[in-house]
Image (cartoon, rainbow, N blue to C red; front, side):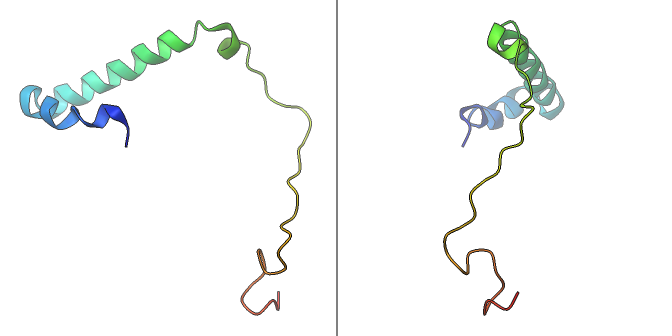
Length: 69
């Protein structure tokens, strides 16, 4: 369970639902703003080569019940 969910209930009781939701939204924007200046995050690129996962070794791992598929 995320650590931020613990104070959500008391925050709603003190500030109200709308103010608590706006506060959480502001917190998400602030944390995102703190992460974006990190060079490794800003220069993150998409892989251009396609990777394939190995097939399951078990005969019935991906087949229907009875192995008739």
